Amino acid sequence: MMFAKETSKMETFLGMNSSFKGELNVKGTLRVDGMVDGQLDADFVILSESAVVKGTIRAKKIIIGGKMDGTVHAQELVEIKSKGKVLGDVFTQKMSIIEGGECNGVIEMKKEESKVIGLELKGREAGKVSSSAL
Image (tube, rainbow, N blue to C red; front, side, top):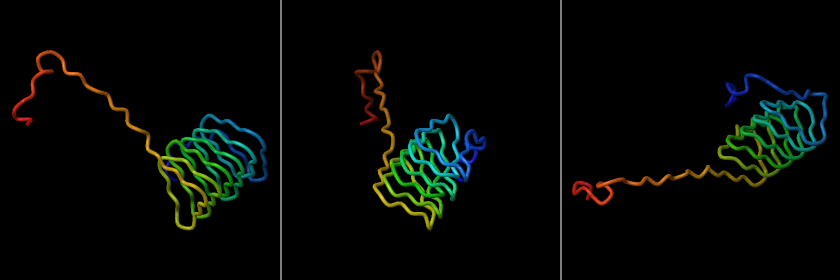
């Protein structure tokens, strides 16, 4: 697991024999072993091999070990495990698909644009250019 240190404390767990329909917002880590029809919002989302999600997932980092049918939005990372299957669009900065994992849909990977801060020279040095710099 690529972000095990960050998810060492499991805040919310949806068990294997559970199903959920609607919108679930979690502060921290959400692990899903059951079925979800709707939207999941959390800091970190882990779908186990038994998980089935239909809808949308939004998180910083997402691990998919089960089945996901819908849209995945990760600010940082999406990891699809060897038995993970995604049918839908994925939007993230980084993506990892382990051999055997599947992703059928549009994958859009964009890095955050760096913010360039202009430096302003002060005093006499603003008008000078060193001859060694030429």
